Image (cartoon, rainbow, N blue to C red; front, side, top):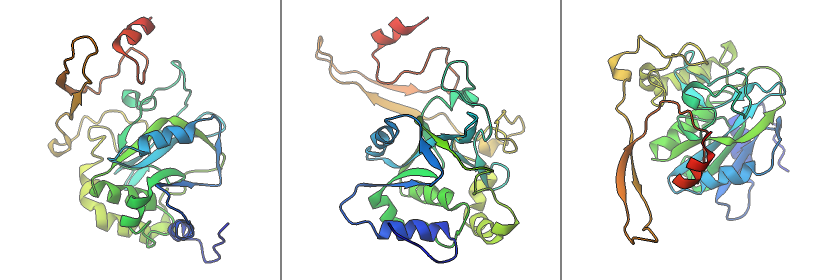
Length: 272
């Protein structure tokens, strides 16, 4: 156990904790003492994403005791500098629950930032970034860390299947108020252009409410072309041929349930 006796600076606490670690670890798990596991397998699921060579950081979906969202990714420019997506929205992991805009609460995806309340990060990325910026003492340090990891070319993944309980009361500590003036000033100075343009993964959604309705006043510079994913399928066991295609993934919600790792035949069997 490492004890830190100086005035509270969460970045210093994290960096001091990591500096005390001995051993060839590939990943570090940052976990707030107010987080409780409610289902098995959450860490293994996060690590499944984290072991991909292009993934630098993985975050969890955090809910409170009333099954309301406490954290479901951090959005740049939301309510000013950055805020939590779907904060206080009702959540249930069933088809009758609130799925989020574009079903984003039910599907893991790459995002701009995740909360350090539960964050899995590659150890080599952490050391390349020299850890958390200790000038950001209490807020926005996790957002800054994720954005700097993105600048190195790594993806930030919000894992929709790693669901944990946040037992603390009140709002996320990264909510910015008058006590965090210096943190906010430094963050704004560093990312003012990104804040002006809006979150690159939510360019057409409102910046003024965490429920994310579409913003019909979005300017042209916030409209991004669709992302194209190249998929290479393994060789068929029957024909010996491989298939290559480019798929433009639509963000429109689907009526079908979310499936992971199922073949097309298996998906057809699960249709209502």
